[in-house]
Image (cartoon, rainbow, N blue to C red; front, side):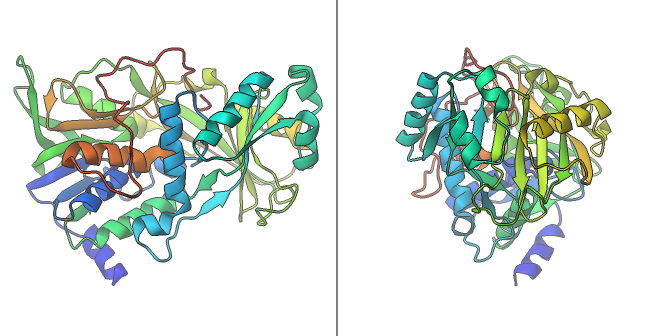
Length: 433
């Protein structure tokens, strides 16, 4: 029955009008559709995806790391709530055996944060019910298979922070689970692959006063009207805004991000709780982060250097996602060999490029109604932090649209990420912010 529903969902016919049209079939678009249907199963929702299927944009290439330490308490609360969703994924989706899984792994922060700040971070996470540890360099060495020779030199007498109850998720499988769950809604939610939005359809697009967004223009089809239109198109979001004459104050642009997988079964085993297992490491001394990929025995390595997150992408469709630059590959490999003593020089490598859509004003997304435009909402500028909080972002948008809150798996904060806010000050712009 589930397979039949999924086939019907994927082969449905695009109609001329819906209650809600969502541009983008990545994690933000599907989470928003699901949070909407949790509140009002009668809503007619269309999710339009420009690719042939899900997972070809930023979501499919996400490291899906579910960390919780952030500068702002509100972001931490969202991250903890998102972590709870991913730890209880089957319950959240009302799905007995979902495809995606939560993979526990501690997250170790290696930087020169003061002892006092590390202690404050432990206390902050504790207020959200999250366990964390404060570790000396020797305690790091005793627990994890890592070199620590440079830690005393870089941070003499320093202490290091470890998030204990975190992990990572399967991003592409999460999209499949959401698709299959939405397919069970009997046709009220429809997914349309190869549905390229060319622009948003507007009344009075150049006139004074409020501009009403009445829907979208779809290539080869024409206009699809909507009571509410949501722009969750990831790296393409601002391109669509500009093509439609939609203006806002935020400096949001996609950037090219490079990552590397190294086959390393000698340090990554399938036994996730085995003593001495490789943790996820945010290594600011070597300016990389890396995490184990359990099951496949790989290590995923990415940048923690903000200067490597500034290569603007003006046409995401022209990005060669199968390429990593030679100098970046060498830097990543050097960094992890400097940190992991048992790592062998051999092992299959596979690199890729993807996109973060960076908010260069304050590294936080802008979510909700855009000032000056009626019936139109945005979800953009996640700066590499989107996957973990996606269930709560969907909740924020669904609350804005329906006015309804739920008792479980819901966002309990006011929308502190509104496009109308002033940029937050004093924040680092980058994925390890």
